[in-house]
Image (cartoon, rainbow, N blue to C red):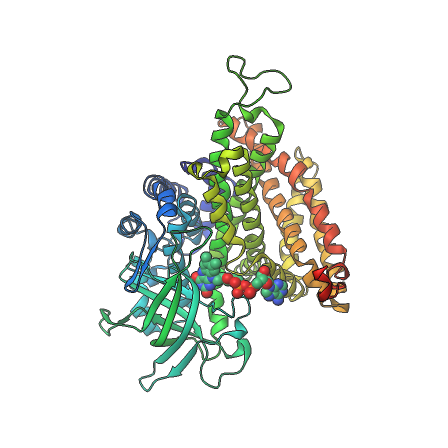
Length: 597
Ligand SMILES: Cc1cc2nc3c(=O)[nH]c(=O)nc-3n(C[C@H](O)[C@H](O)[C@H](O)COP(=O)(O)OP(=O)(O)OC[C@H]3O[C@@H](n4cnc5c(N)ncnc54)[C@H](O)[C@@H]3O)c2cc1C
């Protein structure tokens, strides 16, 4: 397993130089403490914890996995102790609102912490990661009494949270959900049903687990209009906040799975378990979207995490592994062969990983800032940030996890046959990365959400909000020294709108057209979005180089990686464009029976 070194220089570049976080947070009421110095210090402290404590447990956690007994689940050696240290250091509270018992730091720092813990050890990071969604859901939809009862311990990390949607017959289509909730005379409900695939559903890291559960009331309307949301704690909580009796929710088993083996994926049996309604009856799915949006951004970060870790391993290996000579003459004349980093194809793989990781970091931190503007800003500015989040979250989830998985695969490829052998750890990264394209809504589902609900559903308004920003940026920098980036970006930005119109028109005539175009559309959108961030990074790098500021190599590498992105990765949009315009017929005209032949 590659040793993880937090790329602090790049993180500071994105946080401070590209996105001017201090400048932003000084203007957002309640965020003034987030100065550049404070942000850098927190990143540096988190880096120590992730490099020294979490990263060494990544491989051993994968080897050992979790253990199930009827009494509960134990996590791999060292996980619990690492979690206790995390809690003692106050990390769970970092980006939670002060009113909820948190430290009130911007959500941008929450995104960064998720990246760091997740790159060091994704399986471990899922335990505290899910708590954040539970906290946000209770904060947003809970009663004052529920907030009082659950938030304090969740925010401190003494308890953790889960998200319980999936059942064996339904994951994507929650209208098929069957778990029941019967009202009880004391105002609570009795929850009965079986949830599957519940991450962190049972473990030994915290004293209590607060499950956030979707279930149906008796006589609820069919479909998604009849789903309600409940808090179901593993141990009931007494009026004075102390822990009471064991609730009737038990882990029936844990899944044996391809990757993230140290994350317990649980079957949870609710047998008349006591639950408490959150939000209004039959409005549970809308409330659960608070959780799902938090989790979607968290999962997008998984693509960056695995891409970055794989890149770090591949780069080191490519410098050490000797094979053949460079065709332009030996680069290591004293050795028996040249390091493989001299070969163009190995550089293609490394630069693809680097371009995706650094581009995705800029994209995700931008979203982190948008969520802060939406939460702390006011009026039109807050609404605009909220709109950007709505549009860009599915793009980030789908595009960053797809390209993160590609990067994980490329890292394995750089190792040749050794990449396939367990001891190097590169195959674990591939296995761990694969789930990100599935859970929290598959790539196909994110794509339908983007084109259907977000783009066409808003009459193009949400898309225009973002393409206008790109347009302004291109106008501002037109004709400058980085026109090699600005010109193609302006072209693709315009084309994005045109393609949207075409798909929209086709979908009006035949609704299958939107679904047929969806995945190519979201990937196209992802490439253009990343091009915007790469162009912005190129502007900053170019300015720094022109001013002759220190760290020349860092800025030169940025410009060269931007060039690689624009010349080698952005042209993938051409294939996506052709495919999405080819229409639904080539998918739908084959009779189902013909699939057999
Ligand atoms: C390791 C792991 C951890 C998980 N953690 C959690 C958790 O903590 N909490 C939780 O509630 N769930 C969790 N899940 C469940 C996960 O979110 C679901 O598996 C996922 O949403 C997909 O649902 P499904 O498996 O039922 O697939 P299905 O819904 O059966 O989908 C199968 C395929 O059909 C496609 N499809 C379905 N409908 C459409 C459509 N209308 N148009 C186009 N394509 C469609 C899908 O994209 C997919 O490719 C986890 C799953 C795993 C494996």
